[in-house]
Image (cartoon, rainbow, N blue to C red; front, side, top):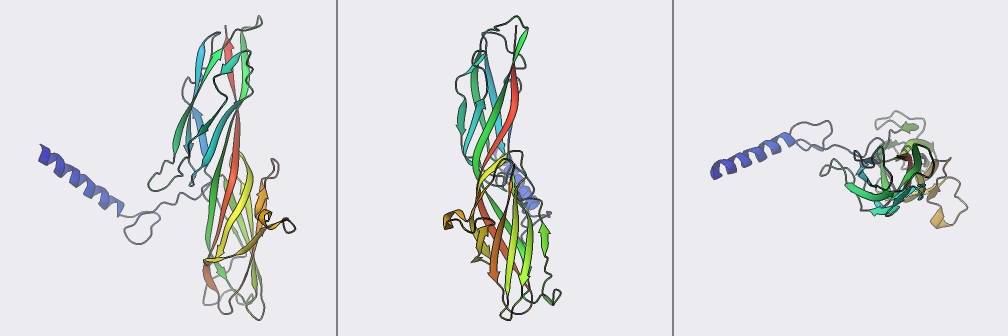
Length: 296
């Protein structure tokens, strides 16, 4: 029986290896399957467990709020905090109104579900102070955290604007994107070429937007490269600010969008393809309204 179990285990492992080497919608070379989790719009999600809190809470009884957090983005999140705000303590009192949560991994090949955590708040209900049959206490659940975003694309550069179609690649003045696997996203790229005798210059204008359910706050461009070499960039409107602030997009509640401008010299000759990369860090907050019902 022991030998049979060993043979069965080896057979299962070989079958799994064979399956992993077959096919796939996205791959890096033959036999290596890769799924890109850094696409679309994904973010931290939160949901309460059933009956935690209960739909109805009775006077002088205890209750719990138990919530599952899932990082569905393609990037890790850190410095996470959950707050419960707005409960009237005459009716409901929590043992604590805020908790930090551990850093959560982003979704990846080795962890396709992303990082998860569970938080629990214990509460106590008090009496109804009027002749009414129930009291409804509205409150807000707030989440805040820090994360990052990577934008990578292969673009075509051409120093001769009159030879858009040559033996190389095709330039695209404007490109739109569906997201890079986070609530923050590079939504579009405008590419403007200024030809000159020595090759000219190219300007990139990248629109950075919040497409999640919460609010982005401090968005910082920490790295920009074109073809593996550092690229000169700045945030539109920050030209006259100190150097350390030129790379910061300050998002307001009603203005969740900003523009990054980057410039580079072009090589003379035919068009060629290269890689454009921008790396960001950002802070994010989310808020949702809930309620607790106290009944006789």
